[in-house]
Image (cartoon, rainbow, N blue to C red; front, side):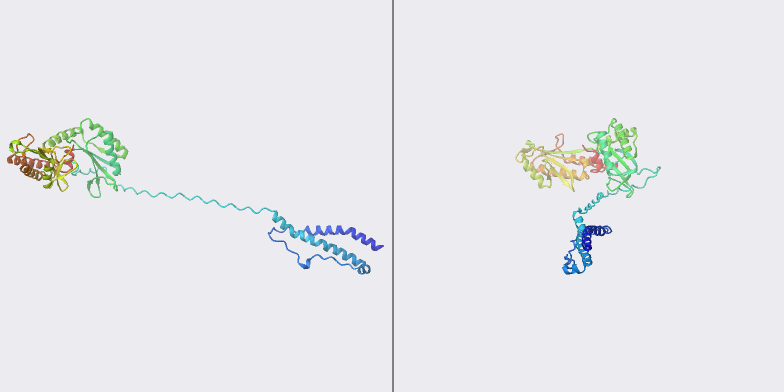
Length: 410
């Protein structure tokens, strides 16, 4: 009777014991960190085995039976607990979302490439002392007797571009039509020169000829020149010294007188005179004769005597469009005396060639008035030109030079 009661009591207490063991096994252990590993498989030694209860053992030792039954029940429940504790982290790890991928760092903005350094400006020349005398203007490009000259000094120097800006302002704002000349003083070389891009200058002189063949520096134009130059001085931080108006008027009168005296164009003409047996000749034949004597033909229907790149004189039949088969009765030669560096040599060469052509063509040599030119007349004209050449050189104007071309242009 007692055995049956113990069995019943054990059967009733077994669930509670199993629950207690379950709670006891779960509570103290902290959850292990999740790892993505496969669950451990139970070894064959841990495989579940059912206890074998033999009837004779149950009858001989009922207490042992109760103890073994409780142990079997506990052993049966233990693998389930082990499986749950081992599989739980795997399930949780599988269910957990993958860790977020950290964003790739944005590339740092690259600094913009530095622009190529600009060429260093030309260093300004040493500053001139306030009481230092302005360098004398000695150049074949400018002669104070024949030019309006403005002398300029700049606080920080002026470069070639600034000098060109002054000339452009004079042409646009003052309406100046005369040829301008700008020279800058090079302290390195101790001379006046045309502005150069690699240099900066403290002193500059600007000038225009007082007159030329077409126009002159009028009294009305002088205030406009001063006004524009003063504006440019404020822009470039400079000061300018202008000639006095009375001085300009006196020098202008003297320049006009000189230019009128030496500005000569000599003309020699060959014409066909029927009384002398002359008759018109084909233009092509005349040109062939001249070319055979060393003259050169240009695109304007003009013949030129060129010596060392300089034109000594020109010849023309008067035709705008030369036709080789057209007959002409006139051949004209012109010598621009102030423009030729060796005017006497050019004069001799021209009259020698004209005399030769006159004999071949049976033409007559005449002057501007149509009167025949004799050998004595040629000699007298030659002597007069020699005097003019000497006068030009005495005044510092070289025949064929820059100053002569500026005064006798137009």
